[in-house]
Structures are given as C-alpha cells and as structure tokens.
Amino acid sequence: MRRIIIALMFFSSFSPIFITSFFTKSYDLFSHNKSIILSNNSYIPNVNLCFELYLKNISILLYFFLGIAGCLSTFYFVRCIRTKSEVLLFSPTKVESFDPVVIGYFLSYFSPIISKFTSFSLSTIIFISFSIFIFCFCIKSMQIIPVLRVAGFRFYKAESSAKVVYVLITKREIRNVKQIKKVYKISESMIMEAT
Image (cartoon, rainbow, N blue to C red; front, side, top):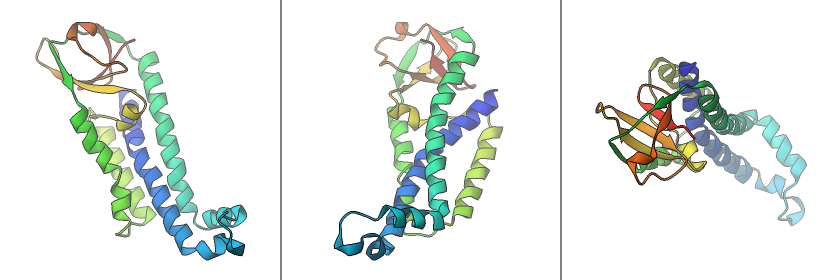
C-alpha cells in the first residue's frame, strides 16, 4: 500500500506541470489559428472551431486531463492516509518550517513555460514521466507534494526524540512542539499529523 501511496504522491506533484503545459500549448494553438477562431472581427471565439482544434490536437487535452487527475489524486492520497494508515504516538523535540524547499518545487512548475522555447514531444514527456514514476515507485520515500500546500497543508521538518528527522504534513500552523501528539506514517521519512 505504501508504494502505491508514494506513486500517487509523485503523480499529484507532477500534475501542475501538465496543467501549465496545457495552457502553454493552448496559447500556441490559438495564436497560430487566431484568424480562424475569431471570425467576423469579433472578440468572442467560435466555440465549435476551438473544440475542433482541440480534437485535432488531442495531446493538448491529454495534458489537461492528466493534470486534473493528478490534482484529484492528491485528495485521494490524503483520504487513503487518514483511513488506511495506523495512528502512531509522536513527540518531536524540534519543529521548523520546510517552506523554502516547497518554493523550489513550485518554481519547477514553470518549466513548461520555459520549455515552450524548446520543443519536447508528448512521447518524450511521457517517457520521462514514466521513468521518474518507476524510480519513485522503487524508492522508499518522497519528499513533498506542493499541491498539498495549495490545498492548505503545511510542511515542517520534525525531529524525533531518537534524532530521526521527518517531513511533517499538517493542516495547522505549529507554534509549539507539544501540540503534536499523534501522526500517520506515510513513508520512512514522511508523517502526517493525525487530526
């Protein structure tokens, strides 16, 4: 079960890149076909022509659906953790914010905009994604899921009394280490506060 959860974590963290790719590819598609879409000198696009363009370029819709599925899998991931994981007692000795690392992940979501100036085919992106997916499926831990941060979760670096450092995911802001009593174990290096 844990390996499936880690795979879901990977998929959900990769989903904003698909959504960003959808918007950059759509912009390219419509900017090249602007005269066809905006007929009769109108600023309102012809919906039928837009739909036809998407059907001819089905890979653009694939980016959108993969992105939405990944974002939705985040909520499924949280539900799986809360319903299928056991609750463990946890008393950290030190807790500090993990937000600077999350910022780096958010910046990676702009890679499709940057790659707009280079050409990657859908098959190349799928191959790279599948390779990373297999890699993440084989490792024992995954660091963070920035989609959860957008959903209101916070990330902390929590050190246990045995000096083991975990990434702690919680819905609330931690001001005192004594606030944390129970957690769900997600992986060897990640826990979620039990609420």
